[in-house]
Image 1 (cartoon, rainbow, N blue to C red):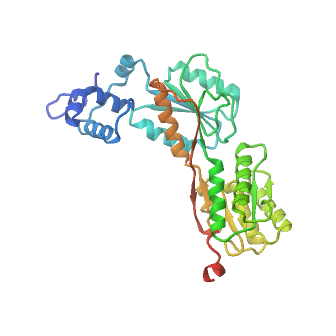
Image 2: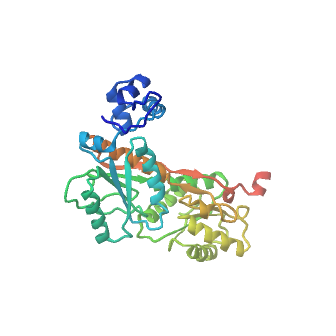
Image 3: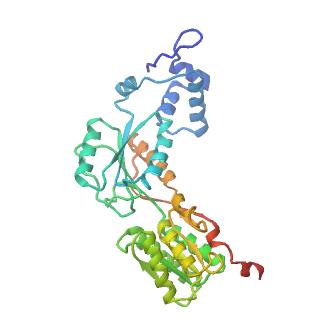
Length: 349
């Protein structure tokens, strides 16, 4: 493997054999570590990378490409024009691919299928090694129609083809985390406000909210579900609908942080104190929304960076000939903030 001359005290450029000697491994292991290939222990990979840094070793990209038949580039195609969901996925993917010196091309289709096909063909013309497809919704999508074979991984929105590799956040588990938390803080009359019923994320979160409450035996009947839009205005409107239907509500679980932000405003305007009178939770952990709310909102983090990182690892495995199949579900986590604190009266009692 040739290198880009950097020069050292002796004027000689470091070689892959120098890196191997310093790290105490074989040249083949160095190649795998630097290219992000093969199954290496984390400490071995880090030792190789540290040795390469100390020696200012940089593999020549053109030489690597000619020797391996790879370009060490991948494409990431998204429909998320504002970047709310795709940027964390991209950052996670770059973290995983960066150690292998792999370049990521980001393309935004803006939800246009013609634009998507154009980007796919452009990336294939560049001889990319693989593709990650992501977006702003968890709804299943048709698989790409590719004129030439290249590994593809779908992140967030799964492919409808069960033979494809797809990674999705655990919406059902996230909803259960919220319900369990609300019940643990003493709430019993919960309503759920969410987005359009035809969106997969809204439907799944609503279904498992109802199931979790029923299974806990916390209420005589299932919690009401209000489907609407992913917006603050719907959150404000839905709060009034929910309170008219049940003035004794003591918790609202919103299907997104945008909805929760609007709900917080409406509750405050109606004289309801959060969290003393009513607890409030959201979903997505969109920090600009959740933390700016009054009070800051407890919410579910879908771990999108981890989703992107795992998608990149699955893509590299597929490029190496170890292709997985089917849909892999990644866990969410609950981020607890002031909006679901135990009411003052309950804590004194």
